[in-house]
Length: 72
Image (tube, rainbow, N blue to C red):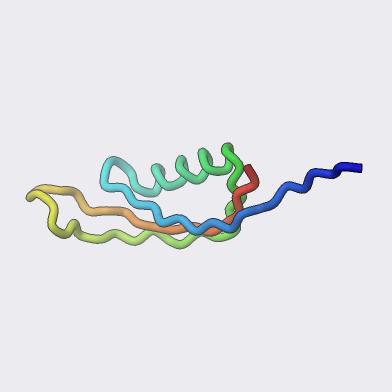
């Protein structure tokens, strides 16, 4: 008998944005990842950082991270 087993791969992702609403963008990214086989097991809070080595007027960055498994 041939039984196929699906293996989950651990993932850790750092995410950042400096366009629009960072919290909303992060939520949308999480939903898209879940729609494509990622099970999120942990989410960091969002921190705001000043741009470094960017052109003048560059907006602040919203940064976060998540952990989970990929079951694709």
